[in-house]
Structures are given as C-alpha cells and as structure tokens.
Image (cartoon, rainbow, N blue to C red; front, side, top):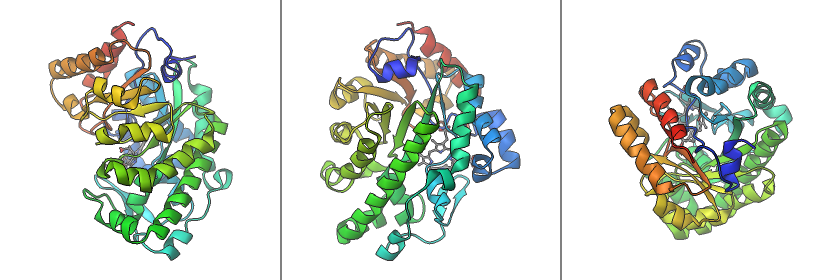
Length: 339
Ligand code: CP3
C-alpha cells in the first residue's frame, strides 16, 4: 500500500504523504502551456491530454497523489446543464436553477455514456502511475454543487441558496437528492475505472450553521458515502468548517480535510481520532518567502505530532501565482520529516 492509502487507514508511514488541491493548475508552467491551446472542458474531453495534465504535478513536484483533472461541474455539464467556466470566476450558469421544474430536468447520470472521457482518463493515468503514487478521484458534494446551480455563479453569502433551502424545502430536498444520486453514480464509475481514493469537495458548506448543516445537507452527503459502501477511502473536505467538523465526520468518509482557519491538532480532536485528517497549510503562505513557508509547514507537522493518519495538504487550492520553487521545496520538507 502506498503512503496515501496507509495514512487513510491510520497506518504508520515512513514519511508523511503530501499532495495539493488544485495541484494541476496555473501554478505549473506545463499546465499554462496546455491552457494556451485548450480551455478546461476541452482538456477533460481529450483523455490523453487530460491524463498528461493529471500527471504533470507528480513529475514536477514529487507529490504522493495524482488527482483526476476535471471540475466539480464536469458531470453536470455532461447531463446538459448549460454553463461556462469563466477564468477567475469559476462556473457560471446560463440561467440559475431555482424551480421544481428546473430541478426535475437534472436527470440521472449514466457515466459510461455521459462521461466516457473521464473514465478513460482514469484508466490511462492508472496505467502510467507508479504504485507508490495514489490516484484520487473526486466529485462536488451536493451542497457545493447546489450553491453554484442556485446562485448561478460563485457567491460570498449564498443568499439565494439559503432562500431556496428555507422557503421551498421540497424543492431543496429534490435538488439535493438528485445531486447525491449523480455524485454517487459518478464516483462509483471512477472507482470501477481505477481511482484508489475519492474526495468529496464541499468547499462552501462552511457558510451554514451546524443545525442547518445537519438538517439540510448532512443526509445527502451521507447518501453519497453510503452508496460507495467503503469500497475505497473517502476524504470529505470543506472550508470554514471548524464548527461543523464533528457533523461532517458523522456524515461518513474516513478522512476529513481541514482548512487553515483551525489548528490541525484542535481540528483533529474535534473530528475524532478514529478518522484520518488532511491539511492544512494556508495556501496564501506560499505567496511569501520560503522562510515563511518553512516555518508554517513545520508548525503543521508539529501539530500532527507523528500520529498515524495525517495527509499533508493545503487548507484550500493552490493560488495561481504561487512560485513553483516554494511548492517543490515544500514537498521536500514534508518528505524530509521522517516518521
Ligand atoms: O488539481 C486539481 O485539484 C484537480 C482539478 C480540479 C479543478 N477543479 C480544475 C480547475 C479540481 C479538483 C476542481 C474542483 C473544484 N472546482 C472545486 C472544489 C475545490 C475548491 O477549489 O474549492 C470548486 C469549488 C470548483 C469550481 C471552480 N472551477 C472554481 C472556483 C474555479 C476557479 C476559477 C479561476 O479561474 O480561478 C474553477 C476553474 C478551474 N477548475 C481551474 C482549474 C485548474 C482554473 C481555471 C482554468 O485553468 O481554466
């Protein structure tokens, strides 16, 4: 078993495994070169190119995992939701989804027909990847997908999403149920194609109170994890989740992703030591000098204290302007901290 899989299973490792959210992205010169020719949807639809983009950070940074290159909106685009991915803004809907009629147009996904290119990418990457490096598949969690569909674009306050949740609970549960079903089918197909770990991205769930998380979100995230039946380790990640961690851990998943707003040791205690954790260096620290990166990374490792079950990562995705050298040195630092 490679280091990532061992850490997911709370087993000791020789060195702390490390990978970065958004590691295949604009911080890499190789990625920027590909993006000059093709946009994100075009990359995902060409399995050989997409496999190459997925593998770039493994070669360039020496990380312990590759994460499938796609977007959380890829499966929704594939079932016909009209949207664009706009540079610096993210997903933007042609029209927001706010009615029962629109929700009912979200049909179930048939991965072999709807996203064959994603599954082919997984197969190609597995064939090229050393067994020492894990392949992580992923999907957007129902709440975070719903927030883009309902708001129509990125949001800070999620007012429209909350308005729908509070005022039309039936529409909300229909929407969340359909997104959970799509997410589960999409992840199962990735697992069948060869991903060894999955991550459920609930990036914006931290905008909710713990009560609302439990009532309006947790059952649907749980539905996704339950459908996978523990066939591979599952990582559940969100930002601004310090107050939600125990409820997120209860939703399922064997690893909980922490953002940087919580201290790793406190976060792990809240999650519970029966779960592994992933995190949690502030990605903005990497915009500073190496001395700042080094100090902050050592603090993360000290707080993990060598306890089995830590996967080093950032608290959110890499900023596009991050100096490559800081990323390379950070991987070396984490690997140099022998267990
Ligand atoms: O390396 C990896 O992490 C794998 C690929 C990946 C992408 N998006 C590629 C991408 C993953 C795992 C995602 C997930 C994703 N997409 C999330 C969850 C993780 C998170 O960051 O919270 C979310 C919220 C999205 C929605 C989205 N798509 C955003 C916010 C953006 C950024 C907009 C921008 O231009 O800064 C995108 C576009 C996107 N997805 C890019 C990449 C590499 C950058 C734009 C591009 O190259 O065109």
